[in-house]
Image (cartoon, rainbow, N blue to C red):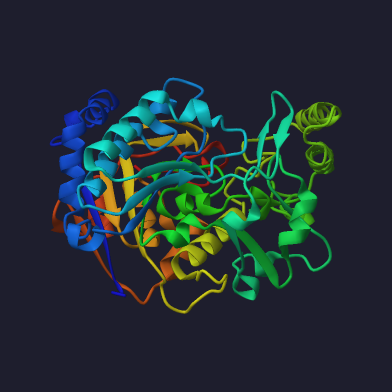
Amino acid sequence: MNNEGFVNIASVFTDKNERTIEKLKEIYLDHQRMVEKISSLTSEYITEENLKGKKILLKPNWVRHSVKPADELCLKTNDNFILAALEVVLSKSPASVVIGDAPVQGCRWEKMISEKFIERVENLSNKYKIPVTLKDFRRVVFYAKDNRSITNRKPLDEYIIFDVAEKSYLEPITSSEKNLFRVTQYNPDRFTESHKKGMHKYCITKELFKADVVISLPKVKTHQKAGITAALKNLVGVNGDKDFLPHHRLGGTGMGGDCYPGKNYLRYTAEVLQDNANRRLGKKSYKFWVRMSAMIWRFSLPRSTDHLAAGWYGNDTTWRMVMDLNTIVNFGKEDGTISDKPQRILYSLCDGIIGGEGDGPLKPDPLNLGVICFSNDSARTDICMASMMGMDVSKIPLLVAAKSFMSDRKISIRYNGSAVSLEDLKKDSVKAVPPPGWVNYLKVSD
């Protein structure tokens, strides 16, 4: 497998007066223009020679259904971007295409995947006479408003359990005495089954291993726990059960955790009460414990860096989990072991036409980024996208780790067809508003 990496970026504006949200919105509505732009950017790799007769997995960022109008622009990979990418892929005569993701457990799939989108996918499938399947990879859903939990939606034999073991990025922060790993609205006790010293398991959809070519379709956004979500973070969606995904550790940094800075017993009490709630998902007492937790949390007078879900720059868990998933996607074998060599063809085609800034990934505001990025190196993609969002790469742990991930690769970066450096990309950057817990830490320089 070729060990040379590339990051190809193209702007969708011709001058900076067109780099506005209103102008960029129009591009999503021009299907043919997007098809041509994506086709041109990917033409060296997305070819009939490389795709004909092969099984393709398209992995969009389907994080959650929209709850406000702007979400259609900046929350998830835009429907029209996915459809344009799908048409480019179908035109290369693959055997089949699966489009799938594992959204947050509260996502209403039927609200996120509209009837119009399904119809357009079916039309493209019929046009090219190639089967296209839409798949929800989740094993568990939980609707907090209804206090309704649905577990084991899919049998475990549709997944492969990977144990990254001592190679896990989580290993250095794993307590040998007790389980500290947490993720919002999941039973914390489940982590004892998947993560402890020397054991770090993940539940990966078999669709990843059925595919001959994987094309990730991230939405470029800020992220309250990781700083940025793009190519690296998007691969977390191949894990079908978030009980396997540590997002933070119980307690403040002065208590052995990373949920918030320092030591605060009121906040810790709120966390413990939240644990009580999460052990009772679907039961009558669930909402009582949620209300108690929220009340105690408010009494602690939280600051922007104090977040019950660890949405701040000191979160030292999420980025490690993300890197574990990237290790599996790149090096994981179908027998559940990790190879020393890359195991599959993986591309990222980033939707950065309208990105997300502020309180991402679930509550972002539109960002006039105005670019599409195609790459075979997720780590360098995110470093490039962060640079174009005006971020200080050296202050984001995920990107610091990304620098050393598959670092033996020779990487080329091109912007609008010309070879560039990261410094060159910064000249055409927009200054993204960081997530609330990162604002004072990740100040964007003028």
